[in-house]
View (cartoon, helix red, strand yellow):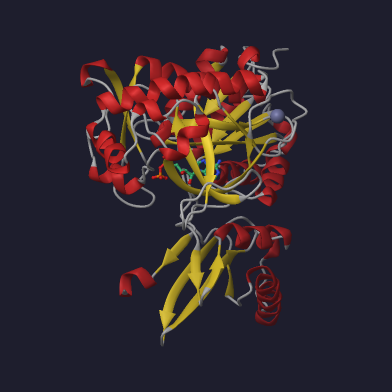
Length: 435
Ligand code: ADP
Ligand code: ZN
């Protein structure tokens, strides 16, 4: 069975990868300088000329781009080619504000789909597989990316898009889907619905899932693997760099290989912008090495993770990134303490609760309040008030241990928290409304 989609590049030596990166970077910087006035201006302001960039060592001389630049340059300001060469747009989900529009040439689409094909093969996919894509289609990159990758691998592709869970399950069972692609929160929901319909994990033909587009914890992975009877692989990407497939997990399931022949990754201190040494936790920054239409250089993702070059048993040589624990702007500062929603998810699943929860932050009498609604599974439900209160207290203690501050936990009835078909909305921060 095929182990890699593009073995030569996926297992290339460090020196070979560096050589490719150096060559592509020099060309890309020249391309951007000559074609993107917005970025030329930033380079001129910093006093950097294209000839100053001779290798990836020099990349730190270049200015950063941020989401604010993308919004300012909206819609055409960062376009790197004549619009007539573009064949597609996609747009961010708008999770954190005004949408960003990204452009693609046919070359850009091909390289993106290839990255997704690498991810599918790494999850064990080949031409015998039936890939059910229930990421949203349309402006969102999730559907198109995995769909394109699935075609490249030669899998039978079910272009389901998100939602209509009954229909998803009907097609999954009738057409013997073997690989499921969607957000982890939707995968959890599909697992829950299958169980409600009386299916056991072994009743479906699924062997793997490729889940991404939102943060999810290791505990969530275990829970999904169990409910669907599969191996669950992480996939990462963002519209600005093309979409899913920038990085993907292999059989080790311990971090995602970044497609380094197309994307050069750095980790920086989000406060100072200083490049941090390997192994440090910080903000991930990407340079697209060969994208034509939307060639972002040193784009600050705001995703916080760690890079590692530790040898991987799968044979791939590309650097690995840890699961992003959330974006720097997902981080809640509550009473001066940094809290990531993923920490709350870890506690809940470890304590045997469902991944259906909602975090409510507010401010009362000048003090931040943190409330967590946690849905009970039907078998956990009890109408004994004392029993519920005891369990709430015990969860509060566990949360305090993890977060360093004490939330108020409310156990709520089964099915009372709305399910997500795409990216889950976990946090409602009402402080923003008052400010
Ligand atoms: P938006 O920024 O509006 O959500 P995108 O759909 O382009 O737009 O989402 C990209 C973002 O989604 C990434 O920057 C990251 O924060 C998040 N993301 C994508 N894949 C993962 C993943 N596997 N784990 C955690 N977060 C992810
Ligand atoms: Zn690997």
